[in-house]
Image (cartoon, rainbow, N blue to C red; front, side, top):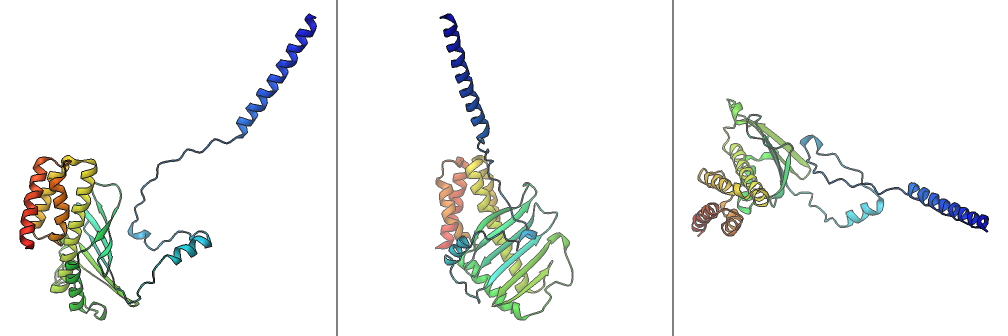
Length: 266
């Protein structure tokens, strides 16, 4: 009797052991899900422009092509680039179409990578830009806009226009041609305004205490005529004057600037 009980227990132990081994083997053979890393921001640099990734499957390519509108071959495309290694913002690159839609890329000493932001140039600023290019007869000209003297501390400017299969780039440090230098100055105002919008939006999200200092900087830029279109900033200033994330001193300063701009726009 005792022998039969021991035999039964031994058999049960073998069954349990076999089941455990099969379960362990199954767990071992089942791959664990790979851990997903956080997406990293990729900033395109000038030398990366023109490189394209693999188009993927033919079905995806066809679907993407079907969704695109046909581009006007005579549409104008503009580019501006500025470099001065000693400046805080030492590189700026702007690209946009004839409606002012585009992007700005820039590098500055406080950042570890090149930053990119959408750009909307106002209709008034675009009218001035088009007028300057027209006065220069840019695509039909071979004029060198560089002045008789160079001023390295002012940096290097590149202006590019592409239209109807034609294109031209002009590069100069300082120009005595009023329209060429006027274009450089116009784009500087565009970049200063775009950088303010970028910085204030970042500050609102992560460093609200920095907003009063940025609003003071805007006031200085406006007074120095370094803003592309003051009226384009009215909606943003109205938001800043009412946003409780902004310290009271900053809200009051935004309200003062807003009142001044609204008076000028009347």
